Image 1 (cartoon, helix red, strand yellow):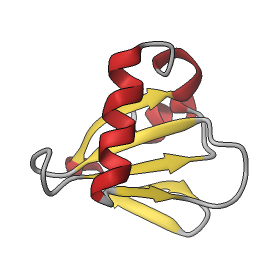
Image 2 (cartoon, rainbow, N blue to C red):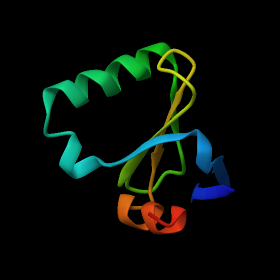
Image 3 (cartoon, rainbow, N blue to C red):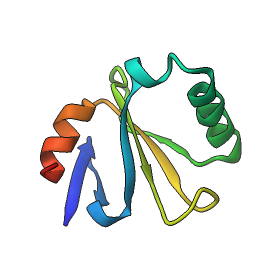
Length: 83
């Protein structure tokens, strides 16, 4: 099943490792460092130009995975998955 994560972007639900709320998770330095490292590696995809509300970690492993920054809230994305 595909999940709509914002604008015209869809990802396979089985590829989703985690869905995270930006406001709650970026308080931690570890999370900020991980986001920064992913951005330096070119693994970050920003969806749309609206205010980002969540990020979705997708992929089989850390090296080949993508991190999508989405304007859709983490709660809404979780409902779309059905969890």
